[in-house]
Each structure stands twice: as structure tokens, then as C-alpha cells.
Image (cartoon, rainbow, N blue to C red; front, side):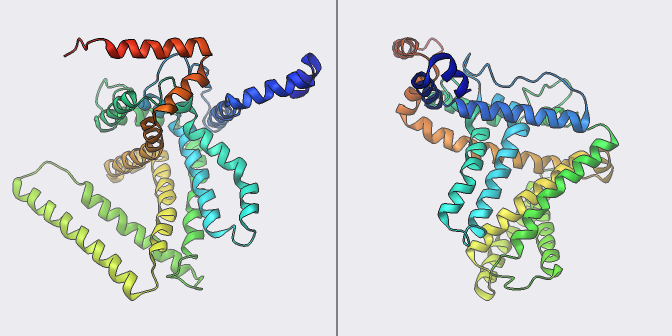
Length: 364
């Protein structure tokens, strides 16, 4: 591209144009749109059913709500972006010590750029995406969508459950289920690598350590079932359930405290376990989704759905918190407006916002 501009307009013009493009974050936009193509090309190869999918060229037409962006890009960009971030964090914690900080930065800077572009580009190029009032409204809309239960005739734009069912519609054949299962096995590698780096395990490299980590994961799943059980029943049963949940919480805190005091378990080990178990849980969830008919026959589908909702809530908060923090800084919104539009339009938009703020609220 640079060579083409040099041949057409000259060297200095090419340098100026290229610099301007970088200041306008064109590289971020290109990286994000390339991720869209990669995801849907891969899905078509695995499952068939080719269809048109917008690559994000309509970002600056109107303000898109947080929930809508999440629905559009959760599986194609956000999951993969967080997976790359998790890999980079694990490499930072355990891998760069031998090579040094400079080597880590040089080796990982392009991966960090790609991951952050996949996570935040839709909100960076979203008009009024960093206005505090719109951020508050977007968060309220997102939580309503996340907690609204699906049903007959409910669309994915209205309910998380309906959207989640739509996201699984492409997995229809036995070949697709097997391929999804094989690809999901990569998430278990996180756990296998991290558990042997814990202070608790020391130099023990036997498979017993890996087996015990699965026992801990099974216990966490049982606790998740206890804390998310909300079936309608009598008052006495509800009291017993609340008592059981309270006792379980106290026992977990006491168990972790005793383990830290009486064994080699350290606080960094707890965070390392989170790094290990979160991707493992997502791998189990992905395999369960691929084999949905079988999971339904086993009676575990409601639990899988609750776990999926928890993961989506967590991913959404990881993305939303930086957006909210930047929205609290007023100059960020001004910078974004100038970035997306030319100077005349930016000035007109700022004036229109001021005039709109002076008008009385007719809804009161």
C-alpha cells in the first residue's frame, strides 16, 4: 500500500498519509475486520452454511448499544481475544523469566495489539461510545438482556437465552460436533501447564497432580450448582437452601484459609488456579454445547446454560469496565468524536449536544 501511494503521489505524501492513517487507528479497524473474516471462514469450513456477515463497516453510522455489539462479536472476537490475553498473561507469569522483559515485549506486542483490537474496536469506533449517560443506559440495557429469560417467539435481541440458542444453530452434523470437540480440547492445556507451576505441587510432576486438579474443578462445579439452585419450592425448603449455601460459603473460606496456613498453597497459587480453571470450564462448556442432545438427555442442560450465562456475564464485565472508566473521563468522548468525524462535523455535534442539554426533558 505504501509503495502504491509513493508511486502515485510521491514519498513524502505517502509518509504523511500513512501516518495519518495510523493516527486514525486504521490498523485497529483492519485487524478487527480481518478477525471477522477469519472466524466466519473457519466456521464455514467446519460446519458449512456460508452466509454474508458484515465486517463492521457501519460502525460510525449511529450509536450501537453495548449489548448489540456483544451479541455481534462475542463468539467471533471477544472469546478469541480473551483467550489470547490469557495466553499472554500465563506467558508473562511463567515464560518470560528466562528471556527477559525486553524479549517478552518484542515477542508479544503484536499479539497484545491484536487481542486488544478484537476486544475494544467495536466500542472505540462506536459514536458516543464514551459518553457517560449512554454508557449507563447501555449497561442497563445489557443487564436486562442478559437476565431476561427466553421463550417461544422471543428473539435473540431481547433475551440472552434466545441469542445463545441461535449461536449454537450452526452445529448440526456429527462431523461438526466431533470437530468442535477436538478444537475445544485446547482449553485443557491451560490447566495441565499451570497446575505443575503451583507452589503447592512443588517439583511433583506425576499425573496425580493433574487428577487432583480435576477433583477440585468438580467440587467447584458442585458449589456452583448449590449457589445457583433457585427452583421454586416451599418456604421451609428455601430456608434450608439458604442455610446450605451459607454453610458452604463459610466452609470454602475456611478451607482456603487452612490450606494457605497448613500447606504450601499461596495466594498467587489461587490466582494461578483461576487462570487454569476458567479456560477449562469454557472448554467443558463448548463440548457440552456441541453435544446438546446428549446433555439434555442426561438432565444437565439447565446447569450448562447457567454456566454459560455466568461466562458471558464475566466476559461482558471485563470489556465493559474499561469502557466505563474511559467514559468517566470527559475528554475521551471529545477525542473519539474528533477521531471519527472531520473537524466541522465534530464541532457541530458538540454544539448540538450543548443545545440538547439546555432543552427541558419532555418525559418528566
